[in-house]
Length: 275
Length: 255
Image (tube, rainbow over all chains, first blue to last red; front, side, top):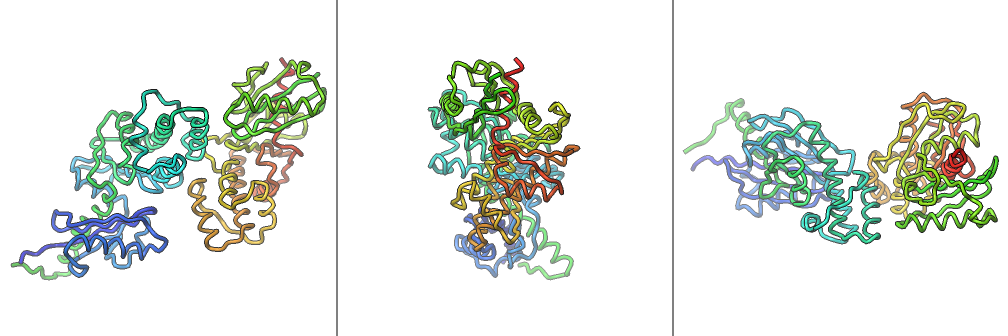
């Protein structure tokens, strides 16, 4: 039987968690759930879910790498690797020409610049300010009583130029949005103004590192067409987004798990059965 | 000489009427989303309290976020200049001003005439301004006056780590769920605002007397915590939220 190296990557973020089960170059399965109060439980749950979707069991997995904000609470991980490294590696798997990764998570936003091999050169992270994070989208969705996935399409469905919000702060932007709504500005136009303001904040972060093509966007907000299109328009470039942008970190972790397992086998002189 | 000052803030619109060397009346009205309406209402209230006919006021100074929309104003001046002028008029020994409103916080040093020497402002982030307290108060199901009262009764110090209002909201919810006492949570909220104000002050070469103005100065706990953090006494006017409007009225005299 051909030796099949099966690894897994687990990414425990502040809002959501993902698991990817990887074999050779194939994604066998993946899962994406909300993070609960107990990170350990979340880690077990997200991996279980991925296992259920595949037809392998836990013992088939040779190596597991944990990453993300909650990576120290993944009891079954063989190693933890930073989310910066994992996101770069994951983006590289999907788009080998990547040089800049913009990851917009639930409570943070990061820009990573990498070399032609997906290795991190530099990065900058905002985890102090809600603007440009998933949270900023949740706030406006709640205010307007719409779903997260509606924000993008609604913000793009406008015929007039939206007014400029005075600030990128989510609290101020929310107040201004409310004032606009009450003074009769159409909902979609207000949403457009709000998205414009938040994209300004994201662009500031991008400028600190500098954007080099190809630009890959990952994380939950990559699914927000309103934000993505505004970024593309401002940077005059195309952003590449994989089929499930939230698994990029876990993807990178699973790939790094392969490398770490190989190094481990070689260094311990372990036998690799083949036949 | 009679003049009026109108300070259209993000949250509240304040009007002050001054005559010769004192403030004879003032009013405060929620700014809402119709600036013109709130300005008219606030002006009417102040006029009535002073027992005057509106026509006798020909000098009107406007200031604040929405100040440029006051059509009846004879002069518009920045809120920092108005704050400085208002403070020095009432407190001739003032040399440092801290002004915290709903959506901005600023600090400045003055000369003996109230001219601004050094200046620093934050109006891009809600944390450190009144908006922070308003958001937290609603999570604690209290009003902003309660936050000050509760904070003064606190016996335990807990720290809120998030510097962002939105993230701090989640932290506060966790603290509530963990069973922390409302008074202690209120205090951590006040400490957070006080710390931000102190950071601003530390950018300047401050000198006494230090005067604290703006709506947030009505929160006595914050004033006390600020004073503790910098090791100096802080002077708070009786009606700190109208000082900038008084300054605007003073500017209207000049023209």
